[in-house]
Amino acid sequence: MPYCYEYPRPAVTVDVVAFTVRQNRLQVLLIRRGRAPFAGKWALPGGFVGMEESLEAAASRELTEETGVGDAYLEQLYTYGDLGRDPRGRVITVAYFALIPADAAVRAEGGDDAAQARWFPMDALPPLAFDHADIIAYALRRLRYKLEYTAVGFQLLPETFTLSELQRVYEIILGESLDKRNFRRRILQSGVIEATPHYRRGREGRPARLYRYKPDAVAEVKARRLFP
Amino acid sequence: MPYCYEYPRPAVTVDVVAFTVRQNRLQVLLIRRGRAPFAGKWALPGGFVGMEESLEAAASRELTEETGVGDAYLEQLYTYGDLGRDPRGRVITVAYFALIPADAAVRAEGGDDAAQARWFPMDALPPLAFDHADIIAYALRRLRYKLEYTAVGFQLLPETFTLSELQRVYEIILGESLDKRNFRRRILQSGVIEATPHYRRGREGRPARLYRYKPDAVAEVKARRLFP
DNA sequence: CCAAAAGTGTTTGCTCTACACCCATGG
DNA sequence: CCATGGGTGTAGAGCAAACACTTTTGG
Image (cartoon, rainbow over all chains, first blue to last red; front, side, top):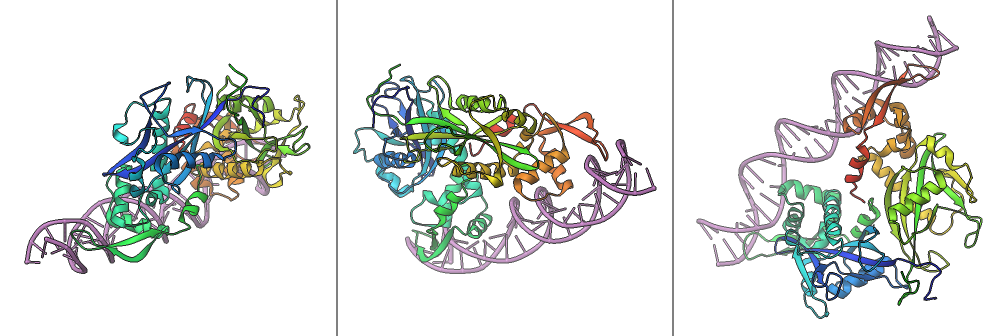
C-alpha cells in the first residue's frame, strides 16, 4: 500500500454523536481537546478512519474507546465535507449517531483514557470545536424524528425496562408529555418489544412489568432506515 | 498543500444516482466504463473529490459534466466505505441522488463526452460495476419514501406542468395507480405548487391548467430533510 | 356529435386523541 | 389504611380512502 499518491487526498474521519438519558435529561458525550486547533474546547469523539476498517467499524471503535460500550445502536447520520471546516486542511467527516443505555453510560466517565470524556445535557452544551454544534443539532432532529416513526427509544434503556421508564425517555427527548394509555398502545402494537414474566418492585407502588425489545427488533429498525 | 502524508488516506469519490422519468418509466443515468476495473460494465457517474470543492459541489460538477444540467435537485444519500468495494484500493464514496427534469434529460445522451452515457429504465438495468446496484436500490427506496411525505415529484418535470403529468410521475415511481381527486387535493393543500394563468392544449381533450412549483419550495423540502 | 382528457364533492371507515378510575405494593 | 406508581377502555374528532359525473376541447 503506497504512502504517496499521484493526487492529494482529503483526510477522512468519523465522529460519533452518542446520546444517553441520565438524570432525566438527554445527554451527549464530549471529549475535551488537548491540542490545537480548538485546544481546551469540547468536541465529539472521533478520529481517522483506518485503511483496514469500514466506516461503521471505525465509528464503533471510537465509541468503544470512549465509553467501553461495544454493542450500541449505531447509525450513519450525514457526511460533512465543506471546505474550511477544519483549519488543519481538508477533512471529510462521516458522522454517526449512537444510543447508549443509561447503565452502560456510567462507565464512559471512568476517565481511564488520557482524554477527558464527559456527558453534557443537550440544553447546556459547552463551546464546541469545528462544526460539531451543527452535527449535534442535526443528530437531535434525526433522533426525534426516528422516535416518532419507529421505536428506537428502548435502545437507551437497559436490557429490560418498564413501560413507564420507556415513556419517560420519549418525553425527555421529545420535550413534551405523552398520554400514558396512548403511549402504551402504540408501543405495544408496533411489536418491537415484548413482555417478560418478571416485575420490578420499586420502593413504593405497584410492581411494574418488565419488557425487553425483541432480539430482531434492531434489524427491523435498520431495515426501515429510510434516512439511511 | 503536501502531496505526501504521514499516514495513508483512503480515496474519496462522489457518485450520483440521477433519476428521470421518460417514456413512462423511471430511468437512471449510467456511464460505460472504458478501463479496468469493470471495463465495459456500466457504472454511476462519479469521480474524485477535488481538494478545493465541497462534496455537494463535486456531485453537482459530475452531474453537470454528464448531463449538462446545472441546477438539478441534489441530496446526499449515504456514504459507502466498506473494504473491498473497489479492487484498486480503499475508496470511500459519498453517494448523492438527483432528480432531472425530463426535458433536460434529453441532452444527457448527446455524447459530447468521450464516455458513453445512457439512461436505463430501473426495471432493465445492465450489469453494474462495484456496489452500484446496492446504491441504486437504496436511492430508489429513498425516492419512493420522499414522494410519500413531501412533494419532490415536480423536480422531475419541466418548469410548468399539468397535474395529470405530475400524477403520472408519482404513479410510475411508486408503481401503483392513484386516485385523481385525492392526489390533487393532497398536492395542492401541501402548498408547494401553485397554478399559473396558462393552459396546455393537447391534441385531444380539455386543455389542462399548468402549474409550477413555488420558487421557495426546494428550500422547504430540504429544510425538512429528516433523513438528510 | 363523439371521443378524450380535465376537473370537481361527498360519504364512510379508521386512526389518533382526550380523558378518569381501579389495582398492587410498601411503609 | 394511606401514599405511590402501575395498569386499563371508550367516545368523539379529524384524516384518509373510495367513489361517478360534468366540462371543455379537437376531429
